Amino acid sequence: MYRKNQKMIAVLLLLFFALGIGGCQDKARRPIADKNELAPEVVKYDKEPTISLYRKKADSKEDIKLEKYIQGVVAAEIGDKFPAEVLKAQAVLARTMTLALMEYQGGTQGKHGTDASDDHTEFQAYNPDRVNDKIVRAVEDTRGQVLTYEGKFAYTFFHAASHKSTASIEEGFPKFKEYAAAYIVPVKTDGLKAAPEKYTNWTVKVPAVEIKKIMGDNAELAKIKISEKGPTGRALTITAGPAKISALTLREKVGFDKLYSTMFSSIKLEGDNVVFKGNGWGHGCGMDQWGASVMA
Image 1 (tube, helix red, strand yellow):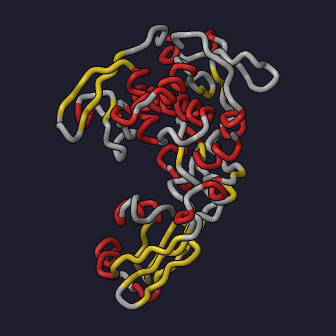
Image 2: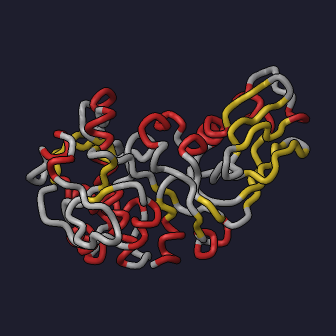
């Protein structure tokens, strides 16, 4: 990338062991991406790019330097309360994911005519008002640093906290399975050891009428259950009699900020509510932010 990189930290080595990172100087600890082995879409970034960003609240567009944008993403996606090395890891992941989505998915060109959006449901969260010196330093210390797999930008997912293991790609982002299955794999983590207590074991009550609306009129909520789980125990499919829905779709429709993850321990109808019990926070793929804080 556009500046000689610094050493990468152990957090990324453990969570992205199959990837290469340009400029890493510790050859014994991880592979180094040779420029001749990098794809054209990676090599072309020999200078810091300016990207276009859609601002949802103002319904406007702006041009911004990539590193400045990454500062706002780190501020919004993780904040400044984590150790410096975790913030550096987050900066690398955010930078890589930005370029991967731009190069391979068209960014948000189809929706807004821009490279990126500050709406976290469309791209990545972004909040420049929360940027401070600690975040600026983390981004600057990893300036230009990206993760690659077989010479291409990797899809570098991240989430808040997982219990014992991160998720497989099919459990968290099945639509990216053909691209990222080789390196987004379950790894051991202690994310819940440090995460806020409310994500350790949670109970969420959702009105039965809401679940009925989501699953369809043929849903028999008295029979609602987890009918299929992935390799790490996360729910893949939920059934309610003849009605069937993917756990990811159900979580999305209920609300990501309400149904914290798909690591359900139980689902059952109780009175006028469907009660979900589970643990963790987020889709589970890639870097566990709280797990990284334990490692750091």
